[in-house]
Each structure stands twice: as C-alpha cells, then as structure tokens.
Length: 143
Image 1 (cartoon, rainbow, N blue to C red):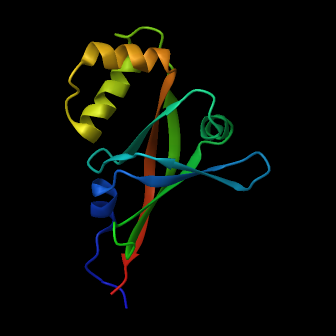
Image 2 (tube, rainbow, N blue to C red):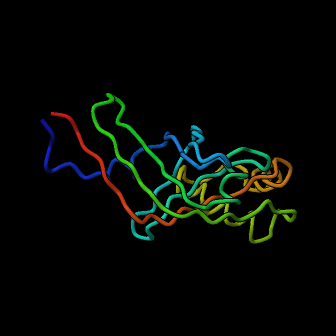
C-alpha cells in the first residue's frame, strides 16, 4: 500500500545522499553516489564533483541525468529527472566558478568555518558544480 499524501519533493529536499544516473557512451546507465542539494523553489539539484569522473564525461556528452534518493528506513524513495549544466573547474578562488560552489555549500550545509580554505581546496581539487534542472519528480512511500 502506498501513501497518497507522500511528497517526493520533501524527501529530495531532506536527503543528503543519493545516486546519480548518467548515460555511458554505450547507452547503459552509470551510477554514482552523490551528496545532492535540492532547491525546490529554483527547480534545480546541485552536486559538487571533481574533474575526471565518469559522471562528468557522461554529462558533457549527454546532459540527461536522473537522481534517486531514499528515506533512512528505505521505505520511501523519490526520483528527479532533468538536464545538467556544468560550471568549473575554476582557477581563481574568487572567480564565478568557485562562487557557485560556495553557494552550493551554503545551501547544502550552511556556513563553512574557513571560506578562504574552502575556496582554495575547490581550485586545487578541480571541483565542478553540476546543476540539474528538474523536469520531472516522482516517488512513493510504502505503507
């Protein structure tokens, strides 16, 4: 039995761990564990990742992506489908690419204790921000 009052958007907003599916060159899905930040008002999901990952190569070739999250008890899930855009990596700790990662961090985790250190690490780690425009959300909770 499913719960008709379940809101998959709420589960997406609460979840800090999910699985991002991108499309490999042979058409099969490639799955990556990620820490998403869902901005329901803006209709986007943001994920920070590093240059050189399979998910980035896949998204550069085909920007379609799907994110799935589950509740801690595993009895509810939510899926978001959309199209990704990528920003970064940045070379300037105070440039727009790194500022986008700062904004992501603030939305996902709040204030960082040392923003200068964070900005420096984002450059040295070759961090890239994926922003997925959400086209469709669905999910359910099992009774």
